[in-house]
Length: 579
Image (cartoon, rainbow, N blue to C red; front, side, top):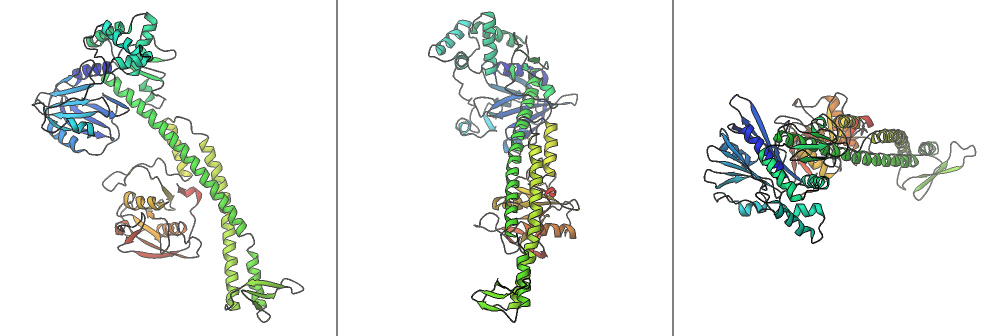
């Protein structure tokens, strides 16, 4: 965070939060926390601190972020500071730390640089009481009970009290060894962002003043509070929060109003430096999230198209393999019609062909010790299996071809950067085609871990039930022991490798409904090595009865108790399964 911007934010927070009291410290994500302050009139004001190594900042965003995981330091800091009245918010030009001082003597120091940053709680005597980011560098200088030791200052000139000549001399020393102008300024002066340096060099080119003169002039303006933090972008951050594009490449965050705005850009400021910072970074996060979701959706659709095309190819191989089911029927009929005329030769039997007018012999495979009536039954069973396989392969080939065409149509609609509305619509379309994307997390004490079901097929049952099907061994393990809840129903084909299948049990019923039970068992049979059998025994039980086996590979489990249901393997319809 630029030192000029940080100074303006500290001044704004001093005016807004002074004499308010701490209500709570709330984690948001893994690198952000929110401090809630209460005013005398009963209103609440929030301060966000983000310590992302790529972009650390402090400000007042327009809305809270996603909840984070509880942290021992934040819990203890909340207990120590809850009800404490904020007295001062301090920083200095050139310092990338901000200190929140309380009337009781405690102090919360926000270290925004160098990365990864930290939040340190000091007691009334200035001793370390705890810290948030437990990096190795922090542990070497922060020990509970020891006096606070700040992080090493970054190399470069401190602008506090530096005159124009000193600033210019430091920059010229860097330029003399061949460093380009922008890097020379950033290396010579500590704490300047790339945006600030770019604006200064533009002002140098426009006015003819030196970098030292311009920076000295802006230091006076920032300290005097005569300007505010501005955003220069193609679209205002406020508008981007409603869905329009916004990115770090097309925007700049400046501690003062630029003298020469870039062509096509607009200037935006909320009039409150802390608020401007918060909204600016909210807009960046929204854009980056949409961009990442766009990349993820494109990759997901491309992989699914490849899988669907491969499925179509396998179906065509089955069409070749089951090309002539009538041959098995003719063999069976020939055996039954020629029992008295059969002649064995090794593992074949020669009998007259009943469909040949001249009674030519036909060769039928049969073991030397196999009864001919049993061999005929086996031929008829092969005929029935080949007939079913041919029909299924034909249907699967047609389904895969149609699904691949639909997925390619969806892929053509995915832009480089998705706005939230377009992303939600695309995710809904993909869910109808079998892709488990954009699934909302389940709330409450029995919520499944994580908002998305990656590596899991999702089947929409006939009665609105949800069936989750694992793909590989690790995904089976994750599905059973991280995503499934204790009261969910668990299925697996008995005695053969196969997918773990989970039937969601939102209502907490002791047994599943008959149709849901059958449908989940059919899916477990289909996604197993017993798929080709006529009937398959499937074990089922509640998830709480499933146990990992110590030392076994992922996905290998034992059952405390279970029941068995016999079903025919049934392939779920293409529109009912999401991957």
